[in-house]
Structures are given as structure tokens and as C-alpha cells.
Length: 239
Image (cartoon, rainbow, N blue to C red; front, top):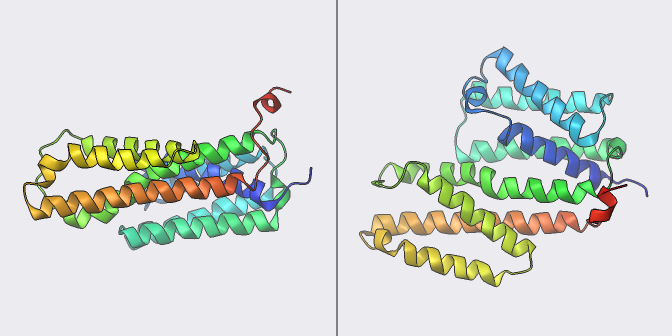
């Protein structure tokens, strides 16, 4: 079958998610203002894109890594750390990926087509859980300074990852009603904390709605992408 830009886009988006949110360590993120560290990150971007597409000789992937380097250099040297900056940074990366996919739609084609839905699903899950954690954390950061936190260290992050992961899986499994049960369960479990004062209640409500909303959008976006890709057939993974 002929390959489309959506297949190349899926592979490159999967590679981007891995490079920026799985293989990028806290040390790399904290030291990206240093040229060697920024170059290391760009190299990781290049390698993940090569592995995802199965292409090691495509100049377009060098351009992609170079553009990623420039975007990250602007962000890190400018000291932009707000939610808006995070959103603009990721939007710039995605637009770059779209441009590369539109210009060179045949970059994809080495691996079996059945791996594409797996890339979309795995990438979508990472976006819903891990990337959502960073986004929600930046959203809540101005408010968190005013809230006493006597809970487990990292407990809020773990709860957020689990709830967004469950929302993502429920929607992809065709069980959206389960999301309502999750919201109800969390509301009951958080009732004691939220009932102490209005500030805590508003903090919990904002965080919960943002977290669930992010996961729902990620799930439906993944569903939409899957409709543009070859169907997942397990037998096709074993030629």
C-alpha cells in the first residue's frame, strides 16, 4: 500500500515523545543551556527518529534534529518555564514534525505497518500520563505554594499518572462511563482534604478537572489518529 504523511507523522511523534519525555533525564533538562548537553539531546532526538522510521540515511531527520535543537536552545536560554512556554515549545516541535511528514511522507516504510497503531497507542499513553503530569504541574504550580502538603512524597504525581492512564485506557476500550466512576471515586477519597477549607477544595477541583480533561483529549486524539492508520493486526507482527 502507498504510505501517507500520517504514518510518517505517527512514527516521528512517537520518537519525539520518547526523546523529550522518556530518554531526557532531569540532568539533561537542567543543563540544556550548555552546548554539549543540548547537542547530546539533539543526538537522542535523531537516534529515536531513525529507530522509529527505520531510516538512517534520511537528511530530513537531520533537519528535524537541528530544528529541535534550535527550539530547545531558544526555550532554555530564554529561561521560559511557564505552562504557556511549555505549550508553545511542544507546539513548535509538533509543527516541525508535521512539516517533515508532509515534505517526506515516505520516510516511513521499513517496519511492518502493524507497528504503527502500537506506536500511536504507546505515544498517546505517554502523552496522557507523563506529559500530562508536567503540564498539570505547571498549571498548578502558582497555587501549590499556598497549599499545605502532608501527603506522601510524589504521591500526587503517582495518583495523577494512574488516573490519567485509567481514563485513557477506558476511552480507548470504549468504556467512557468508567471515567464518571473514577471522578466519583476520587471525589469521595478527596472529600476529607477538600472539605477543610475553600482553598484546598478549589485546588483539588482545578487539578482533577485539568488532569481528567487532559487524558480525555489525549485519548480522543489517539483514537482519531488510529483511524488514519492501518488497523492493528497481531498476526501481521509475525511475518
